Length: 436
Ligand code: DSN
Image 1 (tube, rainbow, N blue to C red):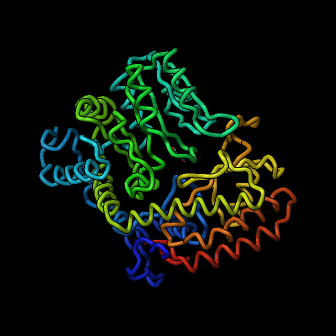
Image 2 (spheres, helix red, strand yellow):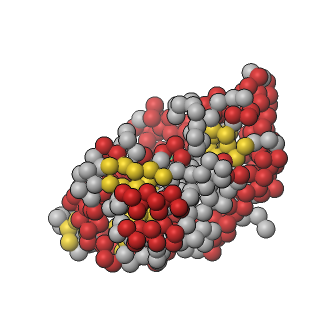
Image 3 (cartoon, rainbow, N blue to C red):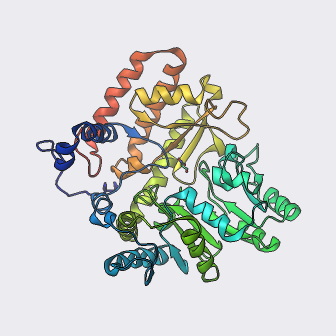
């Protein structure tokens, strides 16, 4: 059975009146830009794995009077009066996060994923201490100790990768590095990891060397919440996640911990790194967590994975070289070397065709990060529109045609696909947005 789009059954917004009348009156120039972005999100096929569509309820919660408050501190222990309501909002978010991810403690205040990870360093490391994380070009994140990030500048970044032959993390490599270097912190997870993360395996290694294990589940938090990926609980000491990717909440982040590390993490977030929390975001996180606990969300999470697998099979059948041979989750990493076109040129042609992906390095990439060999493709946003596995053949066919067209300079094929994409998007209206 097809998965229902979020907001299914809600009356569709119409273009008869401006959606944001106050903004349209006060600043028509800016209002027009927001309208244009809304149309773009409505009539393109968005395949960036870290993007999604939030529900109308999350959108409403993130634009409320809660934005007018300062609330430094935590519920019951604030540095400002007038927190009677805000304390309840934050407590709701915290309790929902703890229940959904089965962790003892949740801090919902980090402004986004990078500050959340920086708070983890502040909590557990001194400058110069070692951190072991996945190398950025292998699928890791900047904040896992990569050189150009503060985390690789102020701390000693050690890196594991993926095996050249399998495209998968090799826990023997991780263990050897951990035994040799004794890092204080180990990160698992990343931004371009198409395979299941073995939290238990990482935890055994972390325990052996006395490191704190941080599971950065930003990409897969929604899959974990929906039961479509194993949980980092009870294996990780700290779970770091953004709230806006597969989890389908507002732009924000959370740190979840065992009871042992609760105070240390709270102190690191505030007053260590941040000032007042963004209460309007906290409210929207609470709404997203409520939605993520519902049965519809589990169906969505499983469909995200089913769509990614189906799309991977269809792309492989069209000669695409997928890192690790496919996917277990919401994303695919395609190495376009055999297609004779760079990731950037392909991504730009796909964008002209209304198919939005990002160019991405592939493991052992001989090309530079700004014009790498690969593209990264994800299925969360299309799944939120209600698009199912039956459509993945068409999507793969479009990607194949446009990648070939990028090589040959065939702009008429790009334009033809653009029209077909528009037609499919009309059949699956984007949640909460005005029609294109
Ligand atoms: N920028 C995010 C992504 O696209 O994966 C990671 O921070």
